[in-house]
Every structure is written in C-alpha cells, then in structure tokens.
Image 1 (tube, rainbow, N blue to C red):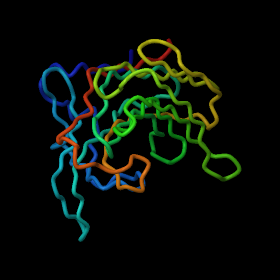
Image 2: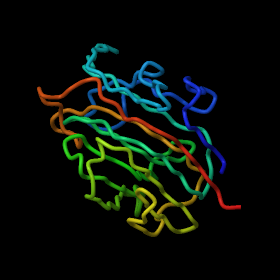
Image 3: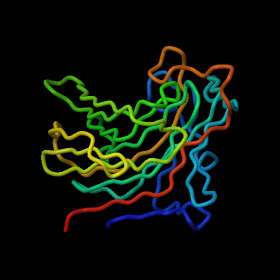
Image 4: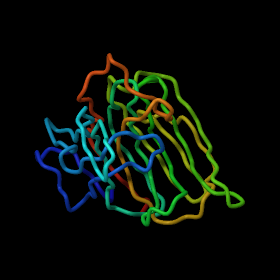
Length: 222
C-alpha cells in the first residue's frame, strides 16, 4: 500500500489533495467547482457536494456548485481502489479516474463514471491518442443503481494492461493504449446543460446531492 485514507479524522488532510476550484473542463458543465466548501468530511465519509447555488465569475453565471480533487500520490502501475456512492438526480455526473501527473491529456482512465439520469449505468473509458486523434474505448456495466448504495471501484494498471473491477469482481480487461507515465487519482462531480453528456437537471431534482467516498486505497507491486 502506498496510500490510504479512511476519512475518520473529521477533517481533510489538505497536504494530500489538490481541491478543485473553477470551471470544470467537461463540455457542457454548468457547475462551478467550489474548492473546500464542496469537500466535507462527515461521519467517516468524504462528501463531494453538489448544490443549487449561484456563482458568477467573469460575467458568467453558474447556477450550481460541485466538488472535485486530485490525490497527490503519483505512480506508474498499481491498483487504485475507491469505495463510493455516486450523486443522484438527472443532470449530475460523478467520476473516478486516473490522469497523468502533469495533466497532459489524453490519457485518461475512468474506472467509475455514472450519470444521475442513468443510475444503473457504470462506464469504464480509456482515453488515448492514435494517429494524432483522440480515441476512446468504452465498456458499460448494468448491474445496480450506483447512486443509492456504495460500491468499490478498482483499476489495476500493469505494463500493457488495464483491468476493471467492481466490488472485487473483474468486469473488463484491455490493452493499455497510451505511453506509460506517472498517474494520479482524480475524483469529481458536476452538473451539465441539456446538450451535454450528463444531461440537465429536472424540476424534480433534490439538492444538495453528494458523491460520497468511504475510502481510498492505492497499492503498488513490490
């Protein structure tokens, strides 16, 4: 094990995380990442809060706030494990992913991604470049409502190989399609507009809603 956080102390150890503040890079997002205010340690969980509240930046109105972070243990190859419950409600989206340490994109590995409008769909995506173009390889899992219960999301990255597990059960394995470089864990949630991948909220949505994390555990082979 190279890193573990069970969120039992009641406060977030800020030396271990970069907290997101600003506009998400995700296309169509209408939420503003609200830094520390959206990351709440409560009852043994780290809660990434999505709230219906207005933020105006550079003349642009963002009608929602959300949360996100990068965990700072960068490594090449290993096992990343996050036990989480995804946010509820149409228009919301939660993700658990790996990014290059320097955030050059692609690659990106999403090993837990759920939209509130499709709570029974869990998506694994490998983003990579081929012939100078952005490519994606997608696998989808339909086994549960990922917004009402906790599930353990795992990616194992070995030389040339990616393996996806949910609740300790292997679901998908594929060939690594990007050059190896140290990667970090990134977790976040957001709200989209009606033309976005996540869709848009409905009048029946209840806010706040949360992406709740029970624990993070990172391993590397000896």
